[in-house]
Structures are given as structure tokens and as C-alpha cells.
Length: 246
Image 1 (cartoon, rainbow, N blue to C red):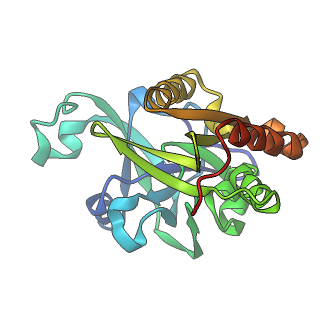
Image 2: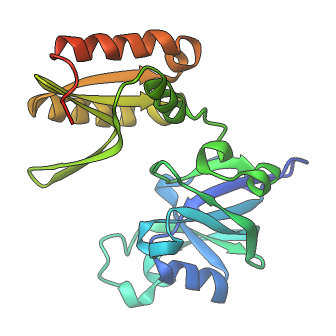
């Protein structure tokens, strides 16, 4: 992990765990990254994603800072109050930062995406309004939602399902006379890794085991043949006896 020297300033977006992490950034001016998970790409700035634990200030990026340097240090030395932490002996990058700066407008995670580490540019960070725009990800869910409305298909966006102590969020849920349909929109960047594909398979098997018909729409299909995607959904609804009456 080295500082980028190119003209285009590169930003690494990292997630904060809680408000204490934000306090450390402001008061002690450092951010920690486990060496085992550290990205190898060089970067000049860090931007900080605030998760749902930040309540009303959650699910957004508000702050960023310039990277001044880094060192490798044991977690127990970074956070001596947590000597019993399971990763206390692990090596971490302690990334030193400059003054914390606040974006003119926060970058919101409107349709929740899991945020770990991701790269963008400083100019893009300063211009983006939401996470999809920040990462140049096509808004496939928004495209599909508009298409469903045009076809007169009633679907519930961001439908949360809790069964057997497991909780999943479906991009869209459609309830029919003889079954129910889960529609998942797979952006290329978010769903191309083997790890994510494994998670998707586990989710699909769980849904199928609880009576759901799963339709996954790839980004390429949504962008090149939206009508075909919608006809596929429409045909599945018909096979399941039509939509459930309100």
C-alpha cells in the first residue's frame, strides 16, 4: 500500500465502524486498515463511509482527508483499551491523515449497498450525489423500477425478509396468486467476485427453500434489453396465476 503519485488524485473509500472511529479521525488523525485486507492500489485521499449505526447521519459519506503517510502496527498498540479483542495481535496499517474536510453535500447510499473498500477519484468524490454515481455503477434498480411501472407491474422495492433468524433485502418482491417472486438486480461491479457470487447462491437457495421464485437480472441485460427483462418477469407472474389482489 503506497501513496499514489499520479496527477489524478485517487481516493480510497473506507467504512467506519462507529462514532468512536470518527472521533479518532478528528482528534488523533489516523485510520486503521487490517494489513490482510488492505488494498494494493495506491491512493492520495481517504473518504469515510458512515454506516447505519450513525442513525440519521448514517448510510452516507460526509468527510474526507488527505493521506500523509502510514506505518504497520499491532492492533493492541493502536487500541490499548481492547487488549482482549480477537484481532489484538494482528498487523494494521495506521494511516495518518491531514485535516478532516466536509463535503458540500453528503454522498448517500440511497439503495443500500454494502460498503467495504472502494476506489474513486477526488474530482468524482466532490461531484457525486450518491454511491452509485461515485463508483460509476449504472442505476439498474432504478431503471428496472421505472420499467415495472411502465408495464403496470406492482412490485415492492427494498423488501426485507426475516426467516429463521436470517434477514435478507430483496431488490423487488412481487406477490402472486400462486407464489411470490424475488427480483435481484446484479450490477457487474458488485456481483462479479467469487465471494459475492457465493453469497448470492446462498441467498437464492434460501429464498427458493422458502417458496420464492428468484429472477436475477444482470446489468448488461437491463441496459441492453430492458423490455426482454420485463417480459420475463411478466411471464413468470402469469405462470403464478397473476398478481395478488390488493
